[in-house]
Length: 397
Image 1 (cartoon, helix red, strand yellow):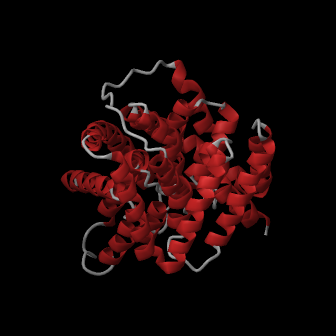
Image 2: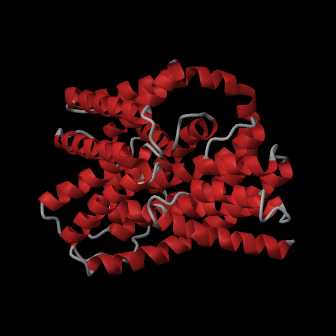
């Protein structure tokens, strides 16, 4: 059985690399396909191997996913915010530093996940109903705090409300994967078009990672620890919202924000498995796929998943280090303006294929909205109103 588990883990890493590097191919798609196979062609295979495969793929994907987000401006649902400081660091020759900051945040988080999973499961199972009732008011407070900490408060209000309305409209349309055109437009193509207009050139990248001091991890990891349990156990909240909330609590700079985001995404993914065990709720596609395979999760399976998360997290950290350098060497040889134009066209085609013509319209409107919001000179995290406002409305109605 050990050999089969190792094979499942190895395959999960390979698929996680694939889904992480190629925008639009999400782990949810692979998970759904796997459930179909397990109930038909592969029904004789022990479901434990599928559980190992899915949890490994989810963690690997979460590590690798930052590479196309930061280097190419192609965000996934929980990496959109990494584009903001990551793109700026890329333009300064520090693209590798940006990627490795997310990787270090993730690496620390897989160890924290192993330590805190069971204490959190006990606490949340007891206070879950109470937390669920106060979440919208916490989010409203966060939105107000985001506005009042800006120098240009009126502009911040406009950005938050405008993107919030856009998010509400996009998420209430009959679209397949509505977040793809919404987030790709607001955080991806808008930044790329501005770079094209400014004739941005990517300088030679420094591939030697500058070691971080211990105190640089304290604030971002603290913010991740405070907010990730909320988003890991409650519906409607993802890594993006957790990062925004965590940033309001810990007040990190742009570079350390990448550590926070890397930590948050791993913790939210890992805690979604803990949520399945403690309150029988699924908060991610990976957790939903595991529930479809095994039904109720027992403590033995949770321990197995936590071990798998730890092992795959450590391996993924080193994979990110290798793949980041490989990507940078390719990017340095390419005309960045032509690359940016190609990526914008690729995103448009991807949106059209997955979300249809209405999705393409949403993508165009989101891109224009993103450019306008960036021109107002407030923190770009204000554009997370596209997810915060719909989440508040979801909880209040």
